[in-house]
Image (cartoon, rainbow over all chains, first blue to last red; front, side, top):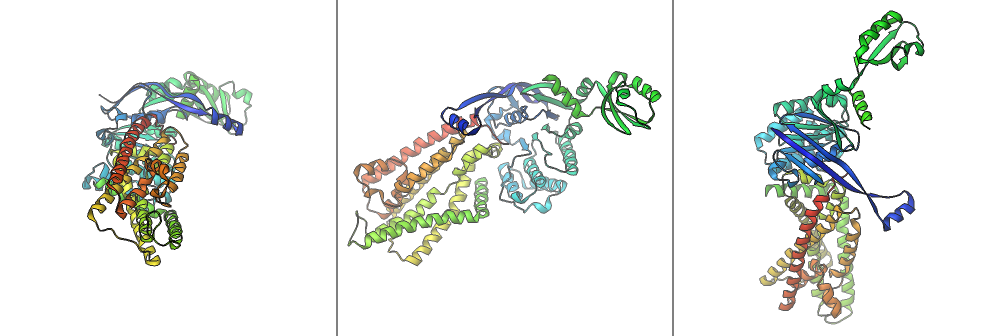
Length: 325
Length: 265
């Protein structure tokens, strides 16, 4: 049974237009013109309980707008949204108690107070029992390693520390549905990894449904089996990540270590040169003829070492988006 | 109830984070009070008896009590709401399983308690230094009516300030209206000149606006001796404003949420 069901969801915004300069300002003062922009345009998908889904798209594709509609912040221009059997925009208590929206650039913490004050407030608002509160906070504080910063006013925390506190505040009530918008933004690589492990564990342990957007493909690759690609408010792919990669990687990367220099002209006979810095050369070659070309190269060129690799997920995504444009 | 208290407590603590800001805001109130205090002391020292029915003691009582009332009524966090809507910070409150109204009430209580404590302390200090001949009202009926007027005026100003912030759902220009409002408030609240000293037609006009209810009306009741018909009329105007503003605020909130963009985040 699906936990989230979205049908023909659309959101349009009226954006005031202004020409640059003083003249433009004067003009728009007397006669303001608006442009109607569709941030999300006829989007439909279903998500089952316990799924962990990557929501991917370039800046301004409509990812965040969709998350905001799913969590009840925005009123959809048209279409239907159903999350846990509720219409999000009604903002029923029972609904809000079961979800959480974490945004990498948003602050629910009280800016001038220590994070612990927000935790205690959330404890009261979400009606969390003492035992549960203690258990969850101890676990999260320990895992995210922030016990020393609990008493520091939030505005004095570093971006990474703040993000961790945000996450704790958002997870205190153990939401069944979690919307994560760029959760690893501003974190160092070690912390990114910790957070990924944590998200995965949370997904499995609580059978929580998680919808995640991220610019770091590492997040997506490690966490999500299924991905939804969105661009200009339209869904352009919805399915398994593996399928996407297979379908769209028509090429593989062949990296050679050469014993002596070979001219570009000769190299380009075998494939497209991506990088050539002696002694290493990287070629892009058609997936279907990998074996054949590799054998040919080994026979004809002064090769010391050879390595064949799949295209990176970044390249795949880039390719998909550029194809659709 | 617990939830409201925690919010009130956090709000009060937040004030402590901006001590200078708060102290200057208080200083502004004290200066305004001293201004009218010395003005009226000067005017009344030249005359024997009363001006417009106010004796020296009555006028200084009016100003002093009015000062506390005005501080209490005007202490509000609803004026931050406009910015929160524009910057998308409102989202935080909307995501919590708590009615937004409850959240606002919590913040109002926190802010009002802090301001009330300070204004009472300030007045205590000023009374100690200046020794004005203030009168203390002991008639329980008058005190009850005063309390009612203060409660009514608190609700009215809360709604009015809320509405001025809800404008933010439709425009980014949220300060213009508030500036205009405060300009009018300076003259029409009665903090400089009691409204009943205004000439006939002007008095009626001002008394039908919300402004005099923020200070003049409760302070005048406290002085005692207000006619029944004036009382009745005052409470009626106040009630009409409260009902009208409640409806407007409700509609603005409902419709505003639909056009809320949760921008910037």
